[in-house]
Length: 179
Image 1 (cartoon, rainbow, N blue to C red):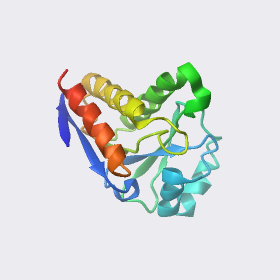
Image 2: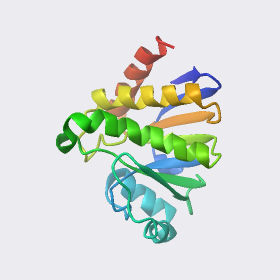
Image 3: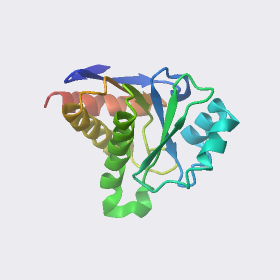
Image 4: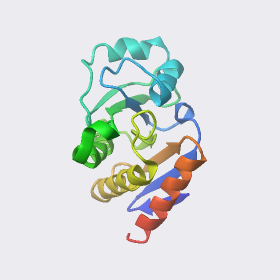
């Protein structure tokens, strides 16, 4: 599924974020930035050991913030690492922290003149954020950013599994009616 927002496109795809040929892919990282499970582990494995070496120089990352590294062995030239909220412990701040992950990642992309970016569904795996709550937050945050920042041309959500794709598809259809 694809929707135009200003000069940009938002695409939904089911698949493997490590194979994306965008300027940057986003890593749903842990606070250490030193690798882990899920998307984080897959990106570190695909990028090669140089990614871990560079991440060690960054001093970690706070929840809702984002940091940039090179992409090394990935097709994407860069990795933007962001730390999503752990749903059950973030409480009422969870939606704001999740939105910050997407916004800060896009700001980092803009600051580095990157035109295309691929996101996973941040915090919806091991961090327990329900897909039905996360998808509209992610998509609305991205849409709002794209309306105000025409420098980004493509945002692709690369979703793992049919359930994730369907949750994002429903949220995108609902939000597209309001454009």
